[in-house]
Image (cartoon, rainbow, N blue to C red):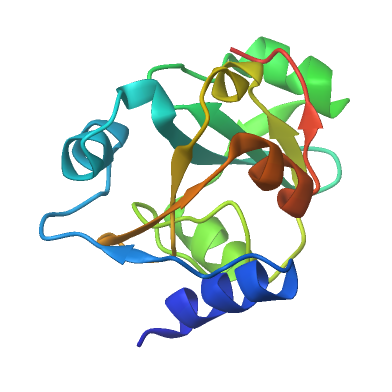
Length: 155
């Protein structure tokens, strides 16, 4: 089991949730891939989008519905500082995850986290579990709580 997957399982267990991580037969690198593999609507995929605070250098995570796009202007307003795209090295070094498997929990560096209200329209959503083939189902309220997210309009 990869270190990334172990961190996600440990974060779920530390939050008192069953670590029901699913290994999918196909890749789950994109929201469309994950939705196909999980057999769910694309907006039931909780994407983890990482930005870098341009003033603070902070890791800023936006957990958004799979069909939504993070609007950089709105995201910067929500975060309270200009945000820049995070490159693959920044993502790997600060989160411990490679792009295509970034989980909303289990980060090496605790991020500032914002949550897309659209995810609350579902009883269950699916999030990356640290690898491009693993996802976990979770009620959106639990995901919002355990990620320490603030609900915000950034799409």
